[in-house]
Image (cartoon, rainbow over all chains, first blue to last red; front, side, top):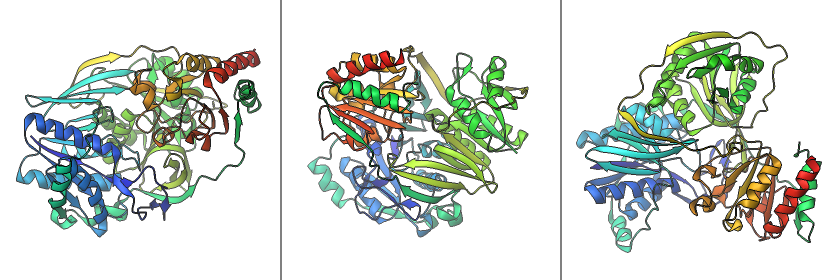
Length: 262
Length: 318
């Protein structure tokens, strides 16, 4: 089974995150593999361990995005591809999905891709729309938000928990699946994995390699624009009390004074 | 100019989010409600009360998985038919999938999880929170059409002064869903009888500090008439169903009032609740990060403080 896992390099969630000129500030140097993509990598590795095959990890971004694919290689992915091009800067979800789709197609031209796996969201943008856009571009059936994923006899089976309902979906390969953080516990890289990842080559492609029009991606093709980004003002009217026996009463009084019991 | 509003509904009644969407849509054009399913007629009056000038019904098969593409193509057709420049949906995972495909089809700009949407000089502009609501963004849609998903409770639902009799239009069935995907099992989870965590005005969340004893959390939620939520820790421990999880990978909520009971406030959790109106927290650890964002924080034993608060709230409410 040949699996492509799409991953994103994002600012560390524990770091001071912000915006510069309306774009996510990526200058802090503390970027990392999007945590939710580790679940996608883990799902792919587990399937390949069960069925044979190999895992290619795919990302879009400048050179420091190699930190993200490197982590996936350490976990055990066999190949890594990074698409980079000055024209990609400022891409929205549509631009990103277009680039990812073209890269998957280019990979599939060599050898068919059976399964594309993504995380449920990127922890910077949190839009969760790239999987659907990618499935649409590649004309693949989609089974998103898998809390459980199995493949048997060419059939993908996914359990997903939506609002009010649990569903089990089935679709034949090739397909696109997004997995949630319920799907598995991502492995830590082994020493051997870390050593192997050091030697691994990341294949770098430009838009020209993918036959993509630069005007369709990046800031040029973006459908939305950030006009203004402002940090939330620091509040100084917060109240913190230590219970001396009446804190419950004071809590209730606070709610009433602020009209929150209506 | 008109705007399409996708009405999420349950047991024949529109969800609260739909009325918020209609309220927001009025600033963008004449609101056309879209109802996937049947029984729209019984809901037409309440939709009109919140501004709908028309209610469009599209039948969908109920047990089909490949639905987002079918729903998206039905909406694209409707948008063309009524000349809608904006399509509004509630921010749920399913709706985001629809919104993505719809925007692709319409060549529209897409904004998800907006907390506000308006028309400025003929262009759709939105407000969003980012990075666990530590940043506020204003954005503009650069295409002629916009698809926007709006967070629950971001806009207060307000009825119109003079509702019109809405036009009822039946559009038959949506195009066939993607039959490559089959639902082999579908289990509705029983309702708790409490409001939904995703759209409640008041949410009481229990965390690690409860040690698994959710009775105090449930009792406070009931005293406040609110929903019950939980941290990832609490759902992973099986103390409460996964559906209750509030956080970046669970429900992203912005109620008027959030109460954290034994919640430390890890960044994953804050990412799903920091946009709440008023934040109250009870925790025995004075260094818990939740206190950095709490409007009212109590350092103390939650098993003492919370029951006392619940009793007092019941007394104050009479």
